[in-house]
Length: 255
Image (cartoon, rainbow, N blue to C red):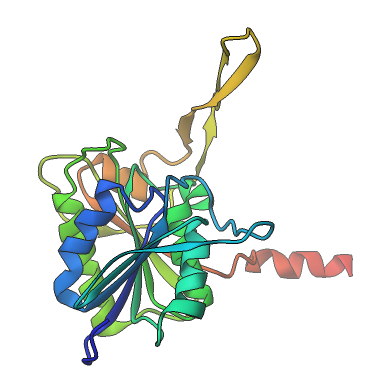
C-alpha cells in the first residue's frame, strides 16, 4: 500500500483469485485508489456468509507493488474480508468490492452467493460494500460493461457513502450494449427442479445441483430480473436487518 491519502479499496470474490472477473475488476478500478486483494485460492461459489470455524486459514502473498497488494486465501469469501480487516490492513477500507462474479446474483441468489456474503460482511464491519456480477458464467466472458458499471457505482459510493447496514448488489446483463442503470428491488421467487440425478462410475446415485428459477413477479418493472431481461444493469440495495417488522406487532399477542 502506498502512503498517500488515496482511498483504500478492498477486493475479493467467490470464483477465486485466478478468475478472469476479479482481474478485470482490479484493472478497472486501479485509478480509484490503493487496492488490496484477498480472494479464495479456488472457487467458493455458493458459500454465502460461511466462515472457517473448524480449520485454520492461510494467506499467500502473490503480488506487491505500488498501490496494489494481492493475496490468495484458503478460506471462504467472508474469511477473506475478516482476515483483511483484522490482520492485514493498517486502516479500514473506504470500500469493499466483491466480484466480478461469473454468473448472476439477482433475485434469491443473494441468499446463497459468496459474492454477496462478502459484501454483507462489509456491512457488518461498517464498511461501504458493493457486489458486482455478470449474468454470464463462462470463464472467458466479456467483462467490459460490468467493469464500466462497477467502476461507476464505486465512484458514487466513494463520493457519497452508503447508509449504515446497507450494501449494493449490481448485476449486469450479458448483452452487447447495456441500455443503462435501473435501481431495483429483489425479485421474489425460488428455484425448482434443483437436482439432476445421475450415476458415478461405480453405479452409485449422485445428485448434481441445477434448477430453474421460478419468477413470481415476471411483469414487475421494479425488480432486478425484469431489468436484466430488458437489457438494463440492475442495482439493488440490500440490508443486514432481516426482521419482518410488519409481523412484530402481529406476534406480540403470542407473548
